[in-house]
Amino acid sequence: EDTSKSKAAPEWYRAGLPHIWLPYAQMKTAPAPLPVVRTAGSRIVLADGRELIDGIASWWTACHGYNHPHIRAAVARQMADMPHVMFGGLVHEQALTLARRLAAMLPGDLTRVFFSDSGSVSVEVAMKMAVQYWLNRGVRAKTTFVAFKGGYHGDTTGTMAVCDPDEGMHALFAGLLPQHIIADLPDTEEHAAALDALLARAHGTIAGILVEPLVQGAGGMKFHDAGTLRRLRALADKYELLLIFDEIFTGFGRTGAMFACEAAGVTPDIVTLSKALTGGTLPLAATIATSTVFDAFWSDDPQKALMHGPTFMANALACAAANASLDLFEREPRLDQVARIAAALEEGLAPAREFLRVKDVRVKGAIGVVELDRIDDVSALRAHFVGEGVFVRPFGNIVYLAPAFTIAQDELNTLTSAVLKVVRSL
Ligand code: PLP
Image (tube, rainbow, N blue to C red):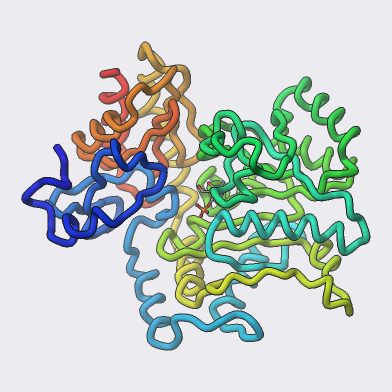
């Protein structure tokens, strides 16, 4: 069924569609996008009245479900007072309160918060901070990064260069981007020894190590354990490199603990957060550094300042939403809900292990993954899910669920049943 030609499609949809450019989509052949008129809890309501159960919480952001009344009220209050004010030379209660709360929640000495407006930009800021950390200390050669196969850190030019260059979505740009080292994660003795040898040779030109802790998300939903992160911390210390955790996906409970760094017992030097920071309501990101990193910028020399400042950084509505989201984590049993979801995903997806085309089924926190040998027609698969009344968006060879933590048991059952049904039919 082609929604774009359907008589039932609203006028705004038919008139506007020829002017929109969609993400990650071959506009000529991609199926028409679904017109959404409302969201609530784990439901997406379409223009024709159909309701889909959402399996991926809008790219893993809507951790409290959509349209939570507590966040809505906080944003409405802030809207009445001050939707936005520039952050150059001005500050406001929502941003300072949020910074204080994030610093208190994060482990160790991660206490200095720089706000931006998207995950990619928060990673750019982390990379810039790391390079300038060395420049400010008089070290000019440490300008590159070690990142990992299977990794994904964003779509901007700087972050594309630290994504997996082969399997990732930016392979087209290979050779045109800054060159970094993309290594195997030290998840085995052999890989750890190889990384150690590489760093022994190259550490003089490396500013830091950048990793998505515990779960590599958009690069293939691959998991690793705390031991891998402990090895990275040890190597970063041995070769004097900054360790940067990109917790844009894993932050705020997704893997079962509030932050993956906390679950792993490893404290990075810089951490990036976004996505669920505002409960998926407004764009906001944060790059948080230890006081050791911050101290390298603390100087009488104006040249040592961090020269970065997105126009909409620390937007007051977004910070109000984030503070309200943190209230919900304090008041409601989110991490217990994640544990319950993990158990339900384990049980619900387990039968897929027996299916012909399935290579692996894995669960970590509120993330359930069915890895196939390949997916021939990802558009057809996505449409098949819509036909089952659920919104699930497979990519590469992966079908995954990452629902809101507040999802009801029967909604979760519908999702796992739909995954089994669709995958079995392949
Ligand atoms: N880093 C990770 C781990 C992500 O999962 C994402 C988004 O999927 C990003 C960075 C990029 O964030 P954004 O899309 O907000 O720029």
